[in-house]
Image (tube, rainbow, N blue to C red; front, side, top):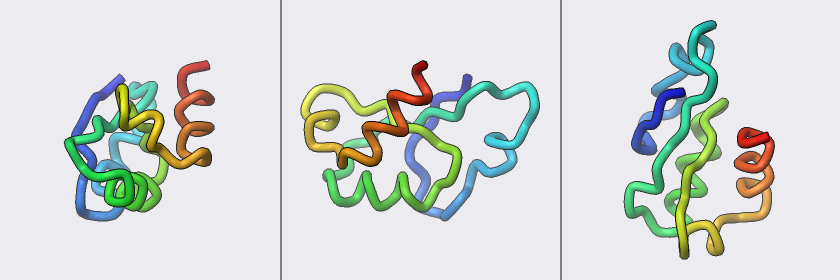
Length: 72
């Protein structure tokens, strides 16, 4: 598992996401606002979020589902 900051470049970690020895690529919220964090997460396919506390409550439901699936 690789834990990273949300990149501003679309699919920046695509090679890691596809790598056979990487289980998950997990992005930290990085202090972004809800809107910014959700937008960046949507543009980085295969990356799941690791938002804590208030960020989790503010996270869009579709992103919460991605997080739960990744954890399961």
